[in-house]
Image (cartoon, rainbow, N blue to C red):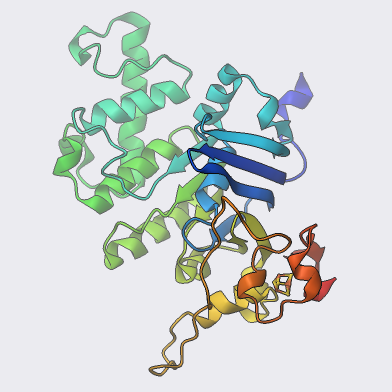
Length: 348
Ligand code: SF4
């Protein structure tokens, strides 16, 4: 009994050789082809790569939110705090999502319900995290009775507290507003407050600042960083913006065409990238010293996952490709330091 109350040893998330297919009318799309990823407790891990490389699918597979069908996990393992996520029942997953994993998404507008007030949505989210049935909008405040009234009052207190914590001013005046009465930045703050209300162990943030103005982006990133320190939170941050990663992450995982090809600390990846794809990504970032025509793109385009290249999926675009790069099996993960790993035959 006591052991179940103690925090589990080992990484918070460990994904091993995860394989995910999507069955489409055109064939089977091999979206994830052996993803290996570890999130340690306290990590703020940036998951980067081009659009369509499998970042979001990797993240959604942790709380098991992949739509199946058409998705199908065909191999691998996902451990969350040592527990096998793929072996859990739907009820167990619902409990896990409500209590230990929270998500925020790119577009705060579409993630709030336009017909309910912020108050109703916050209370509903908090009640769900308290293990109560969702009752959004079914019972007006004035008709709450007995223990229901107490629980909803407690949830409302918590909602006010969390909204203040994420920087919403004059909360008592604004909590009864509808989402359209808030700006994009405020809506994202509300979603962060909802996500944090259950004091999750892992926050998955999928491009949380992409839809916001540049000035608001910095505020939201600062807020996430403060919450990481305050709540000892671990974060999996999905982004294609390496500048955002450099600002708030301590580790990076680079994905290419359904595989993680390099992982390391910020310093290791930004100062000494090893995988040719990571080097290409970094060379494509404009700096203050860049002159017109100096930036180098990566030649070619990402492969069609309905018929991906054999071996290393990057080999058709790689300037260092060797004969073995085009042959199966694909290269495995090679440790370079305790924290830096690369998937490339150059380091075999
Ligand atoms: Fe290039 Fe070969 Fe390394 Fe792939 S395995 S990145 S093709 S050198």
